[in-house]
Image (cartoon, rainbow, N blue to C red):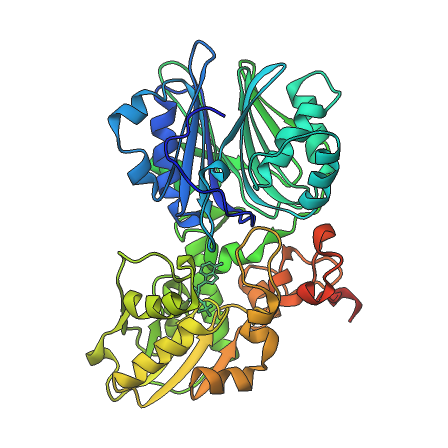
Length: 491
Ligand code: AMP
């Protein structure tokens, strides 16, 4: 693997794969466009980022670094070493343990056909099983990221072309993935058969012809001025090369189970996901929540930033004034990134402060997108009470998070999920609110334009709220208590 700019200790062997990916085909300064795209996708991963660029003489150059995209790719020397018209980039989101630079994507390897760079967002659910089999066959793993499984599967494939080898690999993996691969000949984008994680296609027109972009979200197309063409479809593999773009369907037509939590929390509000603007959707979720769980109050206050659009929707529907009663300090990372419970608790105070005049003497409805461990809510409620609220009601724009995600959103183990341990009444008591309500699962589906959740054919992956894991959890099969799965369809 070329280019290891920093010395690190290799002690993080837990895979954490919540990420953003970006790829460029045929554009001047492809690496600079990629750095911009990764910057727009920073919310999908703040821990590390990397870019591999392919120069016009077929040479691959890579740079990877820990920390924010702007810090890693602002050095002119770094950028000038990443010359080329094609590039692929990756943001990594890991939440515990130390990050080893060897895990920072894109991964790059030399094969008999030449170099190949791969970046992927998601989580494979049979990677441990595949890894064991690959190691038995003599494959030497250098990282603990699932992406390396793709690299070895491609390396040992008996197929001739790179594309056939990649298809051979995706047919063996289970899990959620949106991946971008680049070699001297093509840029490839692929989504898992259920399309759990997002991937979009964009185009940049220019004097020298079309440039193609692949990105996790449309906000990354906007930053480089690219036009949105379409979503890559579930189970689709697109190949972009000198002949243009072609689509392959190695799995035939598959039913989509896009991650519902991307709408609730993860995607950026200005992104358009599967044809639906995330911001509008969040407002509709808030309105639905207001219809389902009305309460008399003087003011609706979002927990910023992620609670803002749903709180706006709630306030309009309820006819209660919306105020920024909590102010967020933007110079602190997301609560989840901090490694220990102690620091995480402190992080909430660092991150949010009460805007006293908007709260004092008022009955407050707090709106947030989710309760995971309950740490954030508890601290926020305490802070709002200290600022003089006479009543505090909490409304959550997702159903209770009762199950861990194994498909690429970082959630703690099941036993740490507040809603897995307590019912809503107990949660209200622990958090310290006068009332607590979550949107119903059907309400969430209605806000997404569906009549409700069709339990036989759910439109989304909602395993974090239902335990309905549609993709087999092969690597966790021996740990049923960790999964806590139950089939919603059978109920
Ligand atoms: P907690 O304090 O554990 O209950 O976390 C809830 C808060 O974390 C909410 O305000 C969410 O906006 C945010 N959140 C939810 N899921 C995630 C995630 N996967 N990564 C980072 N933050 C999250």
